[in-house]
Image (tube, rainbow, N blue to C red; front, top):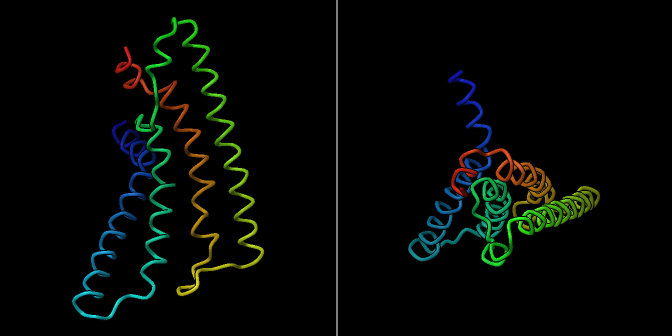
Length: 163
């Protein structure tokens, strides 16, 4: 039973682990880039491409975790001014808007990746395929929807905090 729980935690936090690892890579490379540029005098010509790649992956890989942990920006004060019955309706409307927005972004990201795959576009210095750089987006949108509903309707610890 303990092993199943540990495996579940690892799977649920895989996006956080990816974001953390990529953040560490970004920090280390940026620090090394500063040293190479200002102390050694030989800057990395490819550093900007890798930094952009890292930033894209950090943002998209952490998006689902932000939903799960309740760290997306929300203005609840306005909703809380209404009676409980109206709050429930507003919550369902928000659910529809969130899912519709993420579904549209998912659909659009698939289109962008198909374009990158068709034309073989890659970065100019390291020749990293653009589909690889932005391929995290549809995965992130899928995880975001799952995380949104998990946090909202299945996470017992979050329900206890609200009460």
